[in-house]
Image 1 (cartoon, rainbow, N blue to C red):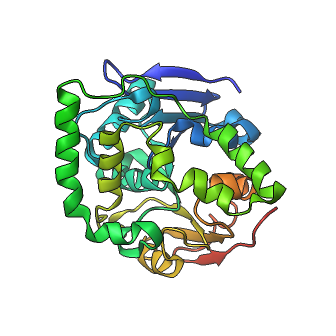
Image 2: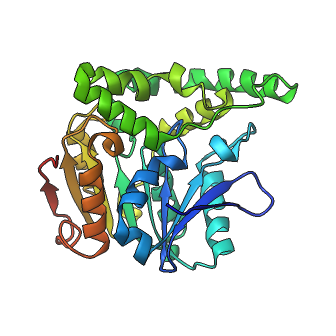
Length: 301
């Protein structure tokens, strides 16, 4: 798959440009992740490569966009606007996974005229958090002092200056092999659900700020006008599926699809992820369902 790494202006943000010369499709990764999260989808989809210009950033603070200063979702949103301006696009379809879905939604709310469609894959909503991140929602205030200490340490030069960049496409393939060979769900949780594993690739300050943004309440969903496809994991590793569906039902124009997965849909259901995104972009079901319709989609092998 041909991809070009570009930099946004003079800043730290880098992004991958893939596909053809069609309209812009922006895809955002989640917490402690990077833009390779979307490589498999784009590589295996002739539809995306031929009909869309796919822009996949490493969000400020992650991977190739290494940065150890203060940052919030507002900074990521401004970075995305600068990327679109640099590429010459007035508008885009924007999607994201996990924290990236939250950032995509914030972008759609700030610049509704620049968003022709929204794709949310397992958004992280503090009101619906379960599992290991459930208690963190009550400890958000305690993360601020830890962040301040980490930023102070960075300011005096205490930091890991070289971090490896995780290839998530390769990790997904390896994890699926392990699951087939008998490791089961442990292959997922050990590699995707472990902060210690994440921190091998992400600065501590970036991880803490991403976690704080994950735990930050979202603005009212009814204020987002863009047509929206929502893909949720029925397993509910980090978010209660029922609560998520009820909250996201406030979107004025939406389709919600439940998939048999824990949370990491890219790794667990890559074919289903690709099919639903391609169909929705083409205007086929479930994207063509009437406003407010919710669909329960069967798992795809």
